[in-house]
Image (tube, rainbow, N blue to C red; front, top):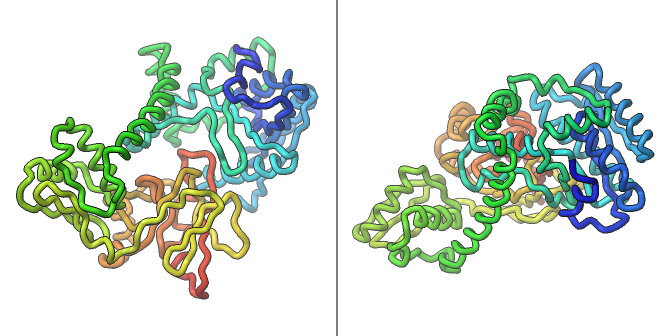
Length: 441
């Protein structure tokens, strides 16, 4: 096991940095607390934060065990609990996550810390990649857990992300550390638990170095996508509204043309299914005649004599990227934004991931997560809700990729409380100058 200094070295934290350390009492966070305790208070000023979700009869005793262990290490500790009355009937896991991170943010504010440390490890990274592969397979959706990430005014760092779970268990055994076992991690009704029980051991059996491979894959993919996007931005003309002359790309490999086409359509806030994309590329390669393809919102993608364009977009709401946290964006007579805390006088629409959220109309592959946790195509959801066909293309949605978190005119309680693939969530909020906001409930 690496030393505490070695674990925090990649993050370049200054001497005396105030840090909130999230400790659940499980082996991962217990080991991290034990390792980092030698740095307090001369190198880092640590505060242990432990939260009782009150979901199991043993949770209070587990929290008391964390407090006792922290005090034995001479670390200050803050405790919190989730009132049973606040437990929702649906979306319990996401709601618990939200309550926990709200508590961690409160602790950070109270102690003046700007860094939050969590104990995600190498097995978590592999599980996340497998989960996202199963869910989408999209290259952009395959990025794993970041070792360091900005969350509003907090920096979230994960010192154990390259450390295997087995190494943590071995360290705890050697150091004779007491830790808690969460029986819910054995419940195979959850997809992650099934991956942990079945897929991860199978992959380790194929190659014992799979955890290192997963970490390298996640890191390299993120860097590759950043470089690819820079190149795409250079290849596409700066005027996104003008028709695109495809002749300049005719000699590029098909895979490059597909990436350029996807990026060009994304700039127009259009998404098409793979067969339509293949047909578009074929029409552009032919360079003669005109072919039109209907897309969401009553628009058409047109390939005419090697020129690519979109028609009919002006009749429908334009997409707005809610890129910056804690900022309002005007959309019609309303204002929308993603916030770390719900602003006074604003209406909460949904919990959303920290990643930029797009406010737009529907796309072909959009899906929602229902209150019971099941996923459903937005098209099918609209049908089940008996929303008239003409209205479906005009409803605003808030989405990250194809995952829709809010639908105009749909009560938030009908959808899942948050994403299972992103532990850090923020609030999508809306305010209006008009008194009638019922359409946005």
